Length: 505
Ligand code: SF4
Image 1 (cartoon, rainbow, N blue to C red):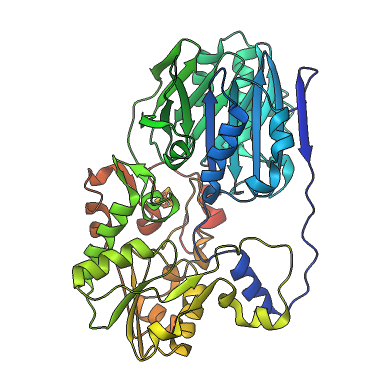
Image 2 (cartoon, rainbow, N blue to C red):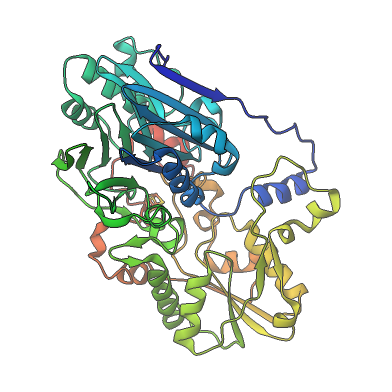
């Protein structure tokens, strides 16, 4: 991806964290502070075509709202009269951009990206948007999801002497588009020909000098929505979630359909269906990843998560004094559990909202206290109480154990854990980092063994049926492979071997 003269390309190397030499336990504590015991999201994408608007600023705020989807790097590519300007760096959106940088990014088209690395190492060279020059001008691509045929695509591109710079599947997609365009196709047919070579999960926003494209893979594993900026003429926005529309005052129009390409230019929005859809939206987006104020199926995910909690209370009631949620993601289900069981909801854990990834190592005593850097129990609420603690999922189980101990230390007499999803037994190959199978506590241990390990008085998970029925949608329209191992998109054996450590491939 070598920029030519029409490309102003700034990629800044961020400071790397210092080498650490810690005892295993302290390293574990530090890992927990920096890396939550949750699946981690792949990416957030954004795209806007809006002549006359400050598209750099609108993209900045869109990415800001999507920060939860990726915290390792952020980038914006702006098109201005056939030229492209790119700024991308390691760090949070607010660290990567400032007023001065945004003022330099002038144009009418922008593509934005937040990244958490699920393929390729965490390094600025892998930051997106991925940019390439073609015979029709520059192209910029932002990708959410993971391909499962990256190595085949890579081999194909290398045969064509493509100069691959990074290790990401996103680069393969942008190269495939450039190859098609350079062979004589226009933007639309070139992009569609490239998408048809891709297998896996991909929600993309793509910028060209003529307009922006948005597409989802035929299974629609990752979300992508269309918004309208009320203006004359009407302007369109693409984003991973509706929370990125709300922040810039755009109205939600509809989802990009699985297997659909939307093409947004000066003439407006047109739609092309390039593959037969077979809906399989990631159910984890609904349980945990997406923000509770984002809309899915015309309601906020907060409402869905409340229903999960209600269903959980019906399936696994408990005789306790208060219900608490693990902030933030366990709270809506805890409130639903409380409503259904008629037991008061209370705030038992206060989250330090400003603990993120830090390159400053905590002191020895802070490391020893581990979890309390993130969550502090409220003694007044917990002392002498029998507690149900609701969380959305358990991945490795390490954090849960420490939270339970902190609750007991704060005076809780009983701690019962309820999880608003089934046990995570399988890794994800579609853009979510759920660890290898052998690191997933529920892949190797029974519910009783997990209960013992995390030290609770009782433990229950929501049933798979309960999780899907609470969607109120056709239950076949979701991927739930990390709970079942039933992968909707075939995963090649070599890739399976890399993560499915406990199963014969
Ligand atoms: S395997 Fe799990 S995390 Fe991955 S797409 Fe399917 S439901 Fe989502």
